[in-house]
Length: 217
Length: 217
Image 1 (cartoon, each protein chain N blue to C red):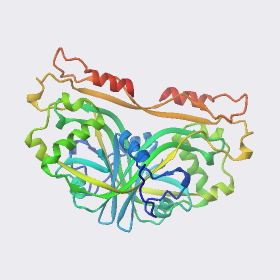
Image 2 (image 1 turned 90 degrees about the vertical axis):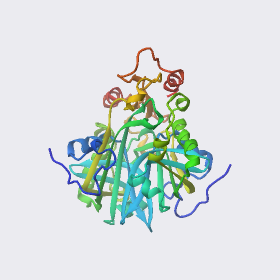
Image 3 (image 1 turned 90 degrees about the horizontal axis):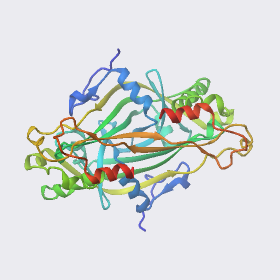
Image 4 (image 1 turned 135 degrees about the vertical axis):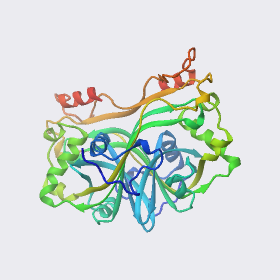
């Protein structure tokens, strides 16, 4: 099991026993998240932008329109922070003070570099595979013009940490006797049954890989 | 209907017809989001931290342990960005290039100021009401010591914009005849049935406001 270095930048200092630094925990959270939040700085102003990501080994991929603010910044090599958060539950303690959430989050740091043309197709496949396995082979592949309009930036992860809370509430010892319900309301990101495009040509049915994906989520 | 000023900082420049600047759209997204992602800058390094928020009028509230990095920064009056993102669906176009997501997101900008002691109780109630209406009156209220351990920061929203995508995929005209399934996989953040704390005292049943909340979500 490999592990990121722990420095003041990525150390989980609040509730340190929720901190994890191993790549297995961190990669699993990155891969389960459908989107990430990218932090950048423009004229001293922090900006947080939600976007789709993919992971290849220890590298995060972002993509977007070549002219977009995010892509311009990401390819500049300036410092980036990317955060992925999965919500797992509302944790309802007896005391207001001990209310919490169950969650799994990753905060990672790195710098972007543009992906050269000859590697772009493989990266685009990684995005599609991340969102919906099976879709790449079914959909119409990108043309040269579409490839040109898309910038892909690779961000090798330099530092990262995960923070994970699981389990029931933790109350003060003297509160356990209070006549107050306590427990967890689990949260799940559910994928609902597919909605056909109203313009779908007749005779096209939902592919198996989509049905399987819905059943799995 | 009131509306934020549109400046280069908050203007939605990519796909501008997805941009919204009215408070109604923006407040609804803020209120539906259970968490937000806060962007700050430390030594030129952007940092994005997920946390719980609440809204009071045009002000976002954040809270946390007095010594936490986030609270220290938020109360310093430095520039902050807060982003709230709701995922509504995977948008599966015929072409890989036109794949997208349905989402509602808000990016807002402001500066924090510490909430004085006499207003803290009311703000704590706002957090609890945001997560789970009815819980505040049921749970054990904060003590003076607990109040002291919690810092609350108020961030009046100076600028904000929402970006919203809804509806089916949009393909290139020539792609509609391809024999490829297209449509939307809706995504819903589901609240599952309550799990009792294993240490729950006997004879305490799940309160009505919790059952109603689960049924509503």
